[in-house]
Image (tube, rainbow, N blue to C red):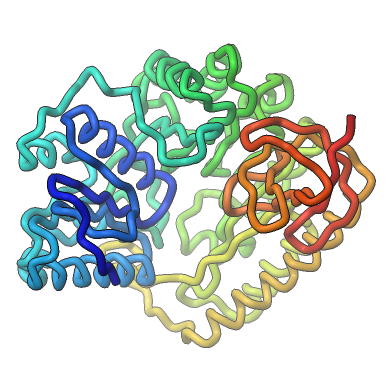
Length: 436
């Protein structure tokens, strides 16, 4: 796995899982940097100290986390590293079991135990750094975590077991964090949480996402604000108005729907019907010009029949989502769905996932073909091979369409916004050329 030992007194933070984990790792790295550690992130080299920030969301994520821990435990046995620490969701959820099964780890920490990790490293936990982060993304975009935990009771989800109940950050703290990000060159922030629309209920006694968007919209130098992970049930209508009217809030919404069969939604405890979901999507499209809607669907939930799956397929065909991802159900202990029989065979889950993505692939191709000849604003993320690669406001990092500009014919700068004309399109890529 890792082969080369680097200088003494170094730390390698290894991040697994989602963007929320990435923010946690960035906070760890920030604290270590201000304690004069030499820190690397996801390095291919070894260090004296390894910190693995784990994911425990579904079986595949847990397997990756455990295999990573075991690989570093073997490096420690061979004397290639001195200390091995594990933090994050898997550690939060299975700490006692992990301590018994992998004793080579020097200490395990949960998702909210950064001060304890710092103390173990004989480092000061610097409270004054809260709101400041050494980001690991390209300098022009960053994630902004607006809350921690989740109060929802979806039957399939183990996140509340690992992250606890919902805790919002204040609007003032988030505005300060956004201003600090702008100072280091960030132009786009992606708002993330376990559940965005619950924001504010704990500290303001009301849903306050729209107020937060207004405050962030007023941050000078912040060009794009993108919303990820919004819950559809009782969706706050003032957020729709905020997306429609605030100039720096992207016409983009990531709203995981999970399914489109009433019977499955009921077993999932999603607190919404298909009719209510359809009405919400139509309202979003009616009130927000050209909004791009990303969603996620879950196939293979216990008891999912072919007929229920076909309801999902028909709904996806009808709604023609701009972006769609698919998860296969993972039978998670201590969730209420674990009491149900995991009766959809793995091969059926895989087949349904593939069939649904084939439907979406056709939809994405058709929607992209309609974009040929259109002009759009593109944020340039990187150069790869012969192309500069960027995104429109309708596309988020890693999960959505990318815009490719031929670097042999055009020059653009990474981190800049560029006006472009779409010249060609594939299922998940757009080709463009800059326009004066």
